[in-house]
Image 1 (cartoon, rainbow, N blue to C red):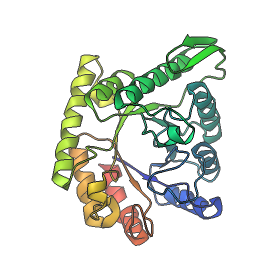
Image 2: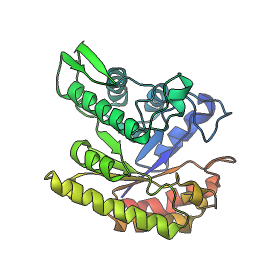
Image 3: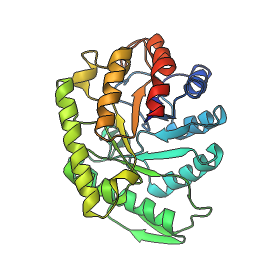
Length: 296
C-alpha cells in the first residue's frame, strides 16, 4: 500500500519547502496539495496557487509523486490546465499526478460565476474531463460544448506520463470514473457521523466501483484507488484525524486496505483549525508503520 501526505498552501514557501523535502525523506510515496483560489476550511488564511507550488515541490524532491487534490473546473479551462500539467510533468520528471474533481462552488462564486446545482457541476465536470481526454489523445483539437470550447488547440509535446485520477463518491460519478479515470479518488461518505459508518459507506462505494469497472470491461486489479481519509467533518471534528495517533492510523490503513484501496492520503498535522495533530505522530508513523504497509 502506498501512503501520501497533503500539504496546504497557507504557509510561505520558506516554511513549506522543508515539509515537502521531509515528506520524501520520511518515505512517503506521494505528496499533494489542494487546488483552490480560497479554501473554506481556512477562509481567512493566506493562500497560494497549487500549480506553482507543485513546480517548486518538484525542485526540492526527486522520487515522490506530486499531485492535485483536486483540480476542478470552477476556475480552470481544461486547455489551460492541460498546459500546466505538461509543464509539471516535465519539471517533475514524470511524477505529476493530476487529481480531478467536480468541486464545490466557492471558487466560482469568487469569480462571479452562477451558483450551480450538483447535477450541473457534475455535467460540467464530465465535459471538462472529456476535453482533457481529447487534448491528451490528439492534436489540433476543436470542440464546442456547453461549458468549454477549443479551436485548433495544439497539444505538443503531449502528456504521456500523467494519470487522470477522478474523484467520485455518488453512483453517477463512480460510473464515470470507472470508464474514464486512470485511477479513482474518494473521501468516503461525507456525512458519516461515526468511524464505522464511514467504513461501511466506503465499502459500499468500493463495491459499486468494482461493478462499474466490470460493466466497462476493466480489470479492478489494474485501477489504482486513492482514499483521502480526513475530509469527513463529523469525524475530523471529533478528533478522528488519521494521524491523531499511531494506532488509529494503523487501524484506518488496515481497514481501507481490506477494501482494496491501493493508496491512502492523509494530511501533514497542523497546530490549529484544520487537521490538528502532533508531528511526533507523523514521524512515528513514518518510522514504524510505513515500512510494513509499503511491504504488504
